[in-house]
Length: 230
Image 1 (spheres, helix red, strand yellow):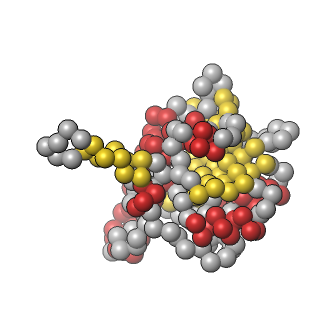
Image 2 (cartoon, rainbow, N blue to C red):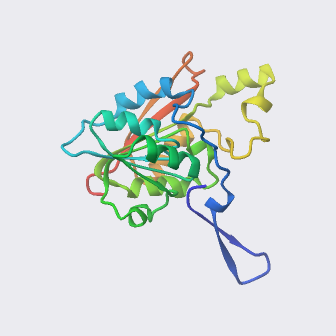
C-alpha cells in the first residue's frame, strides 16, 4: 500500500515493478469527522510528541481526511499530510488550507517525492496494520526525519491475553474480517512492532497501551527517535 512491491515471474529472468497504490482500496471518506478511535489515540499521541521547536514541522503519514493534522495545526506545527485516499486528501485540502496534502505513499524516496526538508516529527495512526510491505513504509518514515527527530506510530494491539480472549469468544471473523477490502492484514504485538522500528534504525523506543484494561488494550503507540548521527 505504501511503496513498491518487487515480484519476479517464475522461470523467467524478468521482473515487474508493481505499485502498491494500484492495489489500494480507497477508504471512502465522506466528511472531515475524526475516526472513531481518535479520542482514545490523541491524548497518547500528544503525550509522546517532542517539544515543538520554532517553526516545527510535522508529517502525518496516512493522514486520511486530515483530522489529526488539524490538531497539529492548532498546536502550532507546520504540517504536511500524505495518504493514498483521494477522497481523504480532497477533504483535508478543503478543511485545512494552510497545510499541504499530497496523494502519496511512504518509501525511502518520500522526501524527494515531496521536495521537502526532513521533519521534526513523523506520525502515523492506525496505518501499519493495513500494509503488505511495512518495512518499506517504516524506512520511508525514518528517512523523512531529521537526525534526532521522533516517530510516533499507533496500531491495534495484539498480545497473548487479548488474542486468547478473542479466540475464546470466537470473534476472529469479525475482529480481523478478511472480507474487508483494504482491511487489517497485519496483527502487531509490542514485540513485533518494536522489532520493525529497531530494524529501521530507531532508538529509545517507548510503548504506550491505549484503551481498555492492561494487556487487553484496544490499540498501542510506539515511538522512536532517529539517532542524531543518522
